[in-house]
Image (cartoon, rainbow, N blue to C red; front, side, top):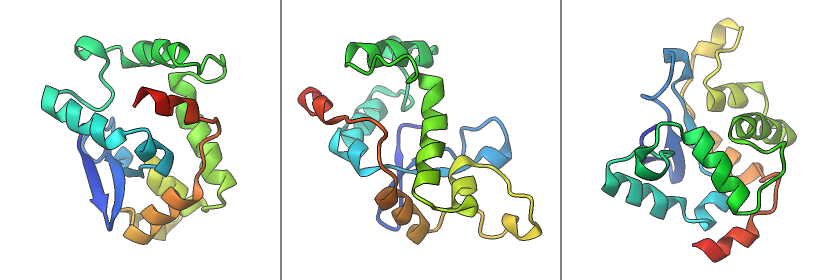
Length: 149
């Protein structure tokens, strides 16, 4: 995933439009306010400066999930149910809890719906991006990470 953030009508998004396994997976994922408070914009700029992708670990590690799991343990997110792979599932649960509906959830996840009309308006609209960012809440308290900024 590129380290640059996309601006969708004033809402910053992670940009998966060119870094997916399939064309259906191309998507924008709104950055939640908690990640902004934790400094994702600064992180993004630093990764761009280093010529690295958004989630590359130290020394441009290709095994980012192993690095991320160790990092999460180091900063106190040591619940065995919270690992790199589970973050995607947890995010989907948070989208459901925010009652955003299948259409928006599918856009955020890069999933194709089954209805004929699901292919229309496939890109996340500015209002949809803002709604996701305003509605979804982190399932864990991250305020203790503010010390690391």
